[in-house]
Image (tube, rainbow, N blue to C red; front, side, top):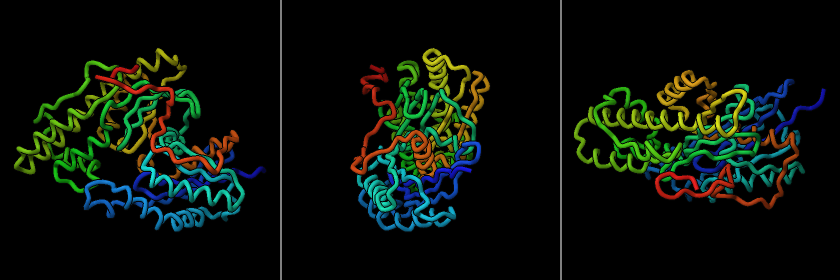
Length: 357
């Protein structure tokens, strides 16, 4: 029986220091042998957001221990690793450089291939860690830094159908939470507060709701939240605003996803309609519920990563590494960190109200 590939994945694009060992079973399906994540929430809480210099320092302090633990927990030895995959972008360059340099050093020391991974591609493939997933599929990538609809035709073959023209959806959640006085990271707490509130209390704007195809905008919504919070006096009003905000986001995604479905079908004409939702915001239960119902309505198969793998993690980085390893797609050790690295590198910037050029 041939040896199964063993890939070390390393992630340090923002404020999680993570390492994972990924392999595959006899049927060629990926399996997680270990997945270690160290969060920096306590480091950044008092600042209300991620401070790049502090994040990088924390990565430097923890990465050696995190990688060793991932290797030990997997039950393998370091010289059994077949390749090292590290996030090279997009992200905070001072943070990316830590994991990228550490991964290169390990690859060089054990004389094994190095693979530079696009963090967004990690999210896009993450559902493969727990489910069957065939190309092509429509991807909704929603996180703290990204909100995009992409046609995924194959590994490293993406076409952007729509994106945010300003703020990412996760940023809108976090900024709303901050305005409501919720400690960082507050985005996930919005869902909890919303359960106590009236979602119909506040009529909030839906920027470019009726134009711009499946492009998105959240800056105007965030501004409206800012104005309302200055007048809020009670906890119940906070709950009502959280519920109204979440309801508005759900309505925006419902309409824009319907448009994305049509664009995907017209462009790709797939034999099977598959809709993948990935990124940290994919953990939101209300958004999941709406998208699953929409998929039933439009005859799509909804695919989500496990909730614990929606946020930043190294298992998804190792998974991309595994896919590229089997295709002998390796990188030189001088591969640079890329603070900006779109999945669809041919997509042009947007101007105006969400019009794709």
